[in-house]
Length: 544
Image (tube, rainbow, N blue to C red; front, side, top):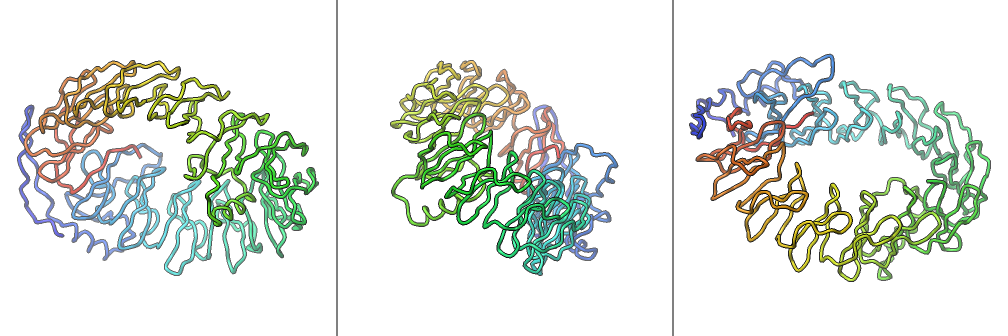
């Protein structure tokens, strides 16, 4: 689509001021794209001239905070600053969220990166780009070859590898001609591609595989422990699990066999001095001398953290592939597991360092510990246990949320209330819905009207609104009698709506996106329209 020149924008009449909206730019978004194609899509558009897309400011020598918002115009996304100037031009079909001052952008099926100052860091020409890790992103070209860029836009590792992994602890793994090697974060090939398989460094040593056997190298590439094992895991707490003659044991950093190869499987490495091993089909925890401390009669056992280990049991009605997946998973390191991800046919529990069951796996559902408490469900009722397994809140609720700032919402007889960590009821069960707390207040719905509740359980703003947003920056957007307005934490209307306004976002960095007659612009906390409504879509202003 093309922006028509000299379109007159609607004059918006506000209660406190009359704001004359400026005309849209004479240069269309399509013209910008055409211009960009002439100078190459990968330039930083320093020569683009338009009232909508202006020259990006020079990149400061010193890193500074920049506040930007994503906006969409004529089907294309870009980013503007607080003055409405495009720092990143609206020529992209898709944009990701900023991370560490960089954003991935997509145009005509190709990906690249811009920084927060509007400079094109990674050319928009790649089939795939990864997230930046440790200041580097992996990119994949049309020939399915991978390499790495740094944050300054330099090719740090040549784009010539069939597969890559990293960065992690300053090292990337690269695969060339079916062999793996190592590059450092200066772009130097510190260890040539020579291994059939390899893992990242842990405690300064990395497992590598040659001729179907595993060993360990140091960061210079020297093989410090010969390749002689069937399988190997990374080091943790000075020991690494290795497989010898179909049995697992543990070696130290000199290759000495500290715990003999005698276990059928290893669930994970050592953590807090303990590791789980499989003996005769049963999981048991051992110490670093190999002594069996206790049996863990569970299907899945995870590493200890803060004195507790999560354990899981699998319901018997599982398929062959579920069992196979578990059997394979039992021989890998579980440090990266996200314990929030639990299958519907599993039940979660917790044990302490003596093997005592703190939270039984018989409960219907157990959430992860949060602020020293875990939410559990038994016989269709929710309650809460501490790290000793003691019920601090007896299961009694139809539903219960995790605690946030010491407060959780609970449901009884179809109505919500809030309780503190001791189970004290702070508000009666009277709400149809309760939002999370923000700026000390939670939006609550009662009889189809919204109000706000304090952390003490007091309704500070009576339910009277048709729609509400959470408080942010001590202001909340609310809808009353089909009109939008903004209230403060005392419930006083500080900005009234006006004709043509159909929607508002939350306040962020002093600005709120406002939709006027189908177009989005931005308003400040005084109710002044500071960026004219000219966008098809608009996001929040965030510090990049």
